[in-house]
Amino acid sequence: QVQLVESGGGLVQAGGSLRLSCTASGRTLRSYRMGWFRQAPGKEREFVAAIRWSGDIPNYADSVKGRFTISRDNAKNTVYLQMNSLIPDDTAAYYCAAQNLRIGSFDYWGQGTQVTVSS
Image 1: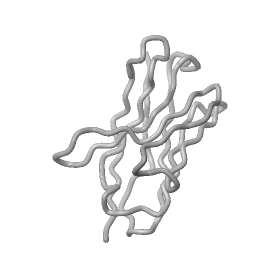
Image 2: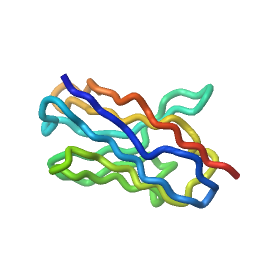
Image 3: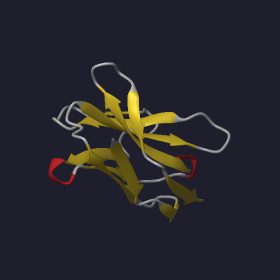
Image 4: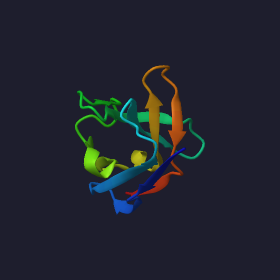
C-alpha cells in the first residue's frame, strides 16, 4: 500500500510564499505521476500541477502558472509545491495524489493540508 503525507500548509498574507511537501511511502511510485490538487469550500477539486518521478516537463493549471513550481526529490520520495505571490483565491485544502500512468487514474491521495491566504 502507498501512503502520501502532505505538510507545509498554513496561514500567509497575500503576496507571501509557502512550500508544500508530499512524502510517499510504501511501494515504489516510479511508474506514477505525482500531482497537486486543491479544493476550496463550496468548490470542486481542481488540478494544480503535476510531474513525473522520472523527470519531464511539469504542467500547471493556468491559474498558477508563473507563481507555483512543482519539483521532486527522488532520493527522499518527496514532491514539493513552491507557491509564490499567493493570492486569497489560492485558499484551499491542497492534496497530493499519485497517477497511475498505465491507466490514468489517480490511485492514491494524501490527507490534505490547508493553505489560507489573507488579504
